[in-house]
Length: 509
Image (cartoon, rainbow, N blue to C red; front, top):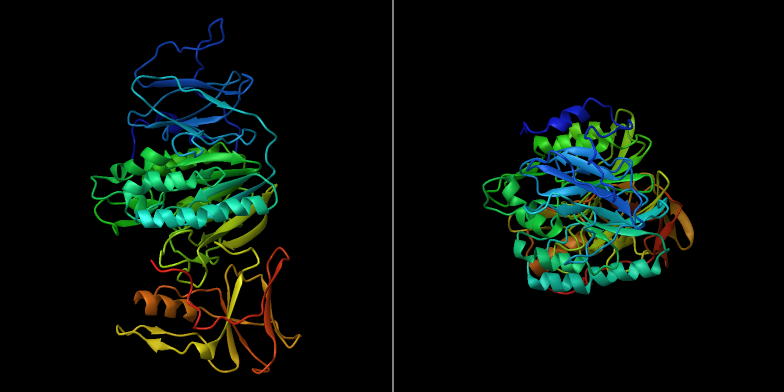
């Protein structure tokens, strides 16, 4: 969808990604007192200043209304003619500015201001700090609350777990990021889930998902309205350390029904992203947050010049690390992070992981640590182990066959939640390592499939996972059997207890 009013964007597109850019808009005329009111105001003129807590200017900060762009000048001033239907003035928070929370829901609203009909001046003030060359993001997939009961459980499980994790873990700056489907078509609950996120003790940003779009509505813009009334713009960016962090709406929604969407974007969104990235030096890294797993070639091409790219998303309600892409010689690390909420049939997901969230730690331009953190359980809980004979295959009334990929008295199945191909996984029998070559095979986790089917009549074929591994025992009668899994950062996790079909996970809905 083309916007004829994007005059400034055509200027920006003449510059290559990563070059230093200067504003093409003249600054406001400054009065003797240092304030500023532009001459020749039109009804669409927006202006203001970005200053620190001492009144010093932030220079070269990217400002946008979601369509048009400019930079603050040497005095911290900016000015542009906004798009007629814009709703926000947005500031791509500098890496040396403190991110604060506040407003109705105690969320980080410091990156935008809502446009009103009574004002044309929008000022931003930040407290300066040293850029955070080490920081952490907690990636919170799909809260997807659909009732007041779900909100209560989110408050009872996810919120205290995040709060306690921040207390227990190393004291480095920490931020939360939801990855869409904050609600499950229950748009009246946006204030409730926003209030819950605001209680997590860290600044929590949000990403929009397909179930966050209202229907029926006349168009994509209208379908986002209730979400944006609570969370602000659906496309935005900010900076931490050597990373540029983007939240992008990749749900192309028709506004007619819950299922009426595809992965995609409107053309103005692509132009916004292209211009946003054009202000970022290519020696920086990018964290790209969407709801639907990123596959779009045009977006991947835009991201390819940067030092490194990490794309994180929700949507699948599983933990998946098999989306990596190599574009123009740059390999993107891309993963689905699981879910802090849906499904709400207890605390377990369809791939056998507990509800939880990904923890990403960054140092310089490097992802220096990553784990999957299960809600209510410690960091060391990364593996479940099963004797395959305890879980016989069965066929549902609709003809779906649930089974492990391998069966037998001498086979064990191991679900390694955050498994990647560069992990080292070994089998130990009676204290002796008997194998370091598990068979990695896409398979159901039969424990969770039997649970979901027997107790909740979830008769579907969702849940085949790529993080299921199989070992063949040398001695099925060994007195002790354990599995060790060492991740790419050299951290080893151990499981020496079998989960049985008698263990029913957590509470009922």
